[in-house]
Image 1 (cartoon, helix red, strand yellow):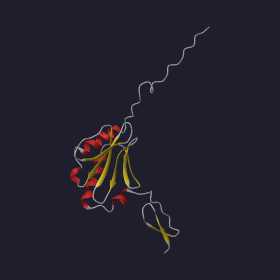
Image 2: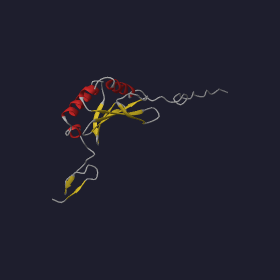
Image 3: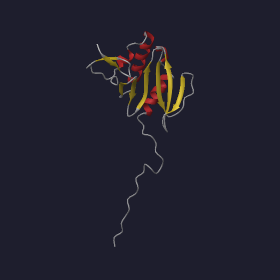
Image 4: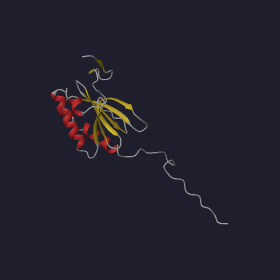
Length: 156
């Protein structure tokens, strides 16, 4: 059967066959995980879902957790779940592999999870903090958010 190889996902696509590797699911991203990683993923998802109303969806190679904005995402990898948590401060902890400035107000923290038992404080505390922070509007400099007072016209 003649076909082509997708340059994104490296999957062979048959002639005339439809293919959209950008559309994926949680199941597709987590299907090849080891037992320990799958248990860790399930606990992580349950913990985050218990925080409250949010949107959980798969996007390319990540599973996103968002309210008004994404507060963290997970990249399932063969040896670990790579978490990227967005906070308004930089964490200094042994669990944090890297911290990068994501915007003026957010720092992205990369954390690797390899076992279910790692999905506990302080990691769950950071996830809850990020969840709470994602619903707060970013602060704007004074004067920018205040409307200008209306001019008063004097009668002649």
